[in-house]
Amino acid sequence: MPELPEVECYRTLAEARALGRPIESVHAPDGWYLKRGTDARRLEAALVGQEFLAGRRRGKLLMLDVGAAPGEPDLVLGLRFGMTGRLVVDGSAGVDRLLYSTSSEDVRYDRFGVQFGDGGTLVVRDPRRLGGVELDPDLDRLGPDALSVTLAELRHALADRVAVKARLMDQSRLAGVGNLIADEILWRAGVAPERLAADLPAASVRRLHQHLVSGLADLIERGGSHTGDLQPHRRAGGRCPRDGAGLAHATVGGRSTWWCPKHQR
Image (cartoon, rainbow, N blue to C red; front, side, top):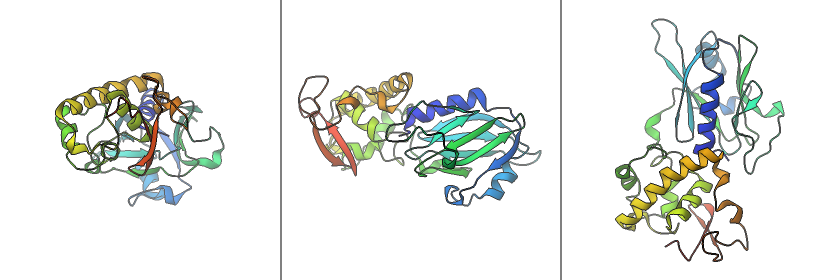
């Protein structure tokens, strides 16, 4: 599933292969996939004849800055990938595989795309159709990016008496953390996912911040959110790869959660 590391890979792919290429046409066959007042006609008017100038990311949101006609405000194309969306440029995907998704190249799953003047393409391929495309996404709806969040920002995000895992996955408080990363980071930091966020001692918050930032960088380097040390053991009968204790399992924040009851407290 695309979490922050996957979308960072998509940003890198877009930066390397999609910038500075005139857009000749837009493919937007699925009106439901276009969000917040965006429709195929608006996309064509905004994109055709223009170029992508830069790629940016906030959490799981990929933003492509778009050149505009003289005197017109610059535009931003926002791409969200849900649970199964992949970015594909000229036939090359930003990540090789997504956990819990098919790697099918079936064009029936192409929810949005552009064709460049040189014949190449940029496509969002999303089998489960849970992502979305919009113009000028509202960044005020997102918390700080989890890869660059400061300790003070994390403290603010955790200032509620709700399960710490649920708060880490709340995109309005902290952008970029999904189910797999939340379990991995809490496991690395030794924090139980059911602990109330506001009750965490200062030392635990500092440790969580350290492992959040360093752990995300590590997962980006490894190639995705599914590459964590805990991931192969998140199953019935799984044991903690750190101390060998049997893993606990429950639903936390509406998501299936695995943790070590021995060292996560």
